[in-house]
Image (cartoon, rainbow, N blue to C red; front, side, top):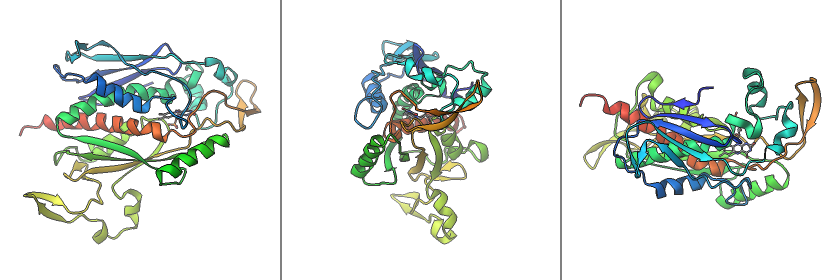
Length: 336
Ligand SMILES: Cc1cc2nc3c(=O)[nH]c(=O)nc-3n(C[C@H](O)[C@H](O)[C@H](O)COP(=O)(O)O)c2cc1C
């Protein structure tokens, strides 16, 4: 399994949902960086489960322990390792799944690929829980970006087909009441990126961000600026004309979502991420027993988010922060 990202700010995520711990190794945190632990904790708390009626009741404190790479709150420049100990595991909830893959989960392809050796409890390494260490790395990247004047803010803009925040919550509650789940869309805006960060072709900002964002479980799509809607526009509608604003060459509209040719344009970078409905649902589903190869009716037990979108909002910020800080380090290597 390969769960690493980046070249200059390298992030390797490890652990399994019901293992003693999950965590992250980060290379590229600059020596001397003072990690703001309170800000990091506040960021992790936005993702943590069991905080409201709209997410799983699994309780986890999600407090990172730094094993190395940090001394007295300051990064040493050596590889940094942070773990979160798993507390509230109930592997027995998964006992009946040993040979029955859950629809919508990685169980079946993982069983074939890893020959049954993968840890199945709680989804193992495929679990949404692995977004906690993603948020440790992302939280640190966000602090590094803030020093460079770059901010990232994401929010849920659609859940269960609803765009009004109260109706979104109602859609989640209704899905939970039916033993079902809903998906939705998170929109992120990045401000303060200098012009020209990124690379053409395979190293473009879109590519980099998409690769990191698809590391978040349940992500099924990403679009930048007008995205798929651009396919329906005329060039005259989709192009962003330039003007001079406060002495700077500036795109006057932002259909491009702040990226042209893989490079930042100086306009805010805007992208939207589509999340599928949570695969674990209380409704009975069809599956097969892999050992007997016979059909079975499956009822997924355990505690699950009826919608992952609200908890995924900081995960999107984290993934984008890792990608953009990595890209900025690449851009800084170029001679002025
Ligand atoms: C923050 C977060 C929490 C999640 N919680 C759950 C959950 O409680 N139950 C569940 O079935 N899936 C949950 N997921 C989604 C699954 O982990 C994911 O759909 C599954 O591993 C299959 O991967 P894929 O959807 O990326 O193909 C969560 C995802 C995220 C981002």
